[in-house]
Image (cartoon, rainbow, N blue to C red):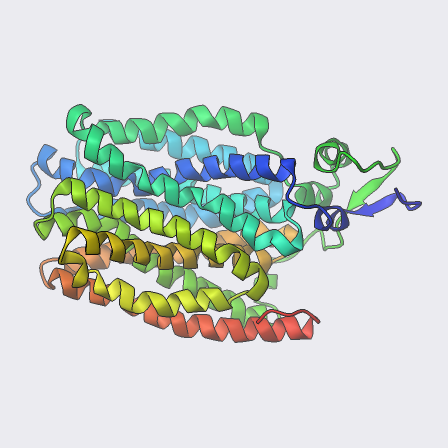
Length: 446
């Protein structure tokens, strides 16, 4: 194709469209994170049954159990992000699958809250480790004009997976018992890890950074079958092969990285409060258990729609649609405890809209965490954002547990809107800083 025997990988990727390779990668990534999403939320849906099985009078004791997997994610995301940057996205994803599959499966035989806390903590390391590596993998195969869309579409599997425990809890658990949730959450990822190892490609940008030319040549045949290069061609990326961790705080990133971490923490605080306590709170408000479970599933459905809706606008306008969803989410989340309890229809509508905002925001900032950083530090940068964000996701269920009994259901949801109000301000600031960075680089990011 070119007289020069050195070809920059980015030029090949950026002139690609949404082809068959892209469809296969997105579909497989979607399934990978769908299973991860199931395991993230599965414990919350087991609480009503565990309360009876273990004869627990106060459901607030489950707060640490809900937070345990989030603590595991706090450590697993940055740890496995480093593994992904050093040994490959694919390696980190498979290892993460095995970790959370084993410890989730063991939850089926747990006999106490303490045992479940330990298992959820260890499983959370694997759950968290998968997330930044899927983000990095999809960002590194996508052309620049579709990078946010690729990350967001692949990541919506989390929302679908998070919705699945609701129907299982509503329709199957009454017949087969609560361990079924953990059997499914453990056995499926362990079996699917073999499929991932066989079919998931390694990041081509990562391979170029590591100068693994033979693997790149094989991948190029799949990625660009109509293009032909001399046998002696070397494929490279025009980035530093070694980027220090301090790069996350250099230049404009000195402001952008802490703000991104703050947005992760605030949004995940709200989201995990909603998804962790909604079944118990609605049941305590005398709403049937099946209806409460389905309402929580509607949170995930709304999140899927919000994620798809924000994808293309994020590619075109950067932080602007994310900021808009933060602002829109404030009255919606606060309204759950008021209009949401007036009728089943209103409950489903307002919870759907809350999911639209919270998961829409999350998918947008997931994409930003991949766009901000270079290949050599992408999984690490995303991993730290996911990890620090888990501080918020840990606090959400814990604060909810502390406030239950002290505040009414409407007051609890009003309190849940406060982090979104703070996030709206932080998101606006990040949008302006990112726009300034784009102007300095000769780009447009309004």
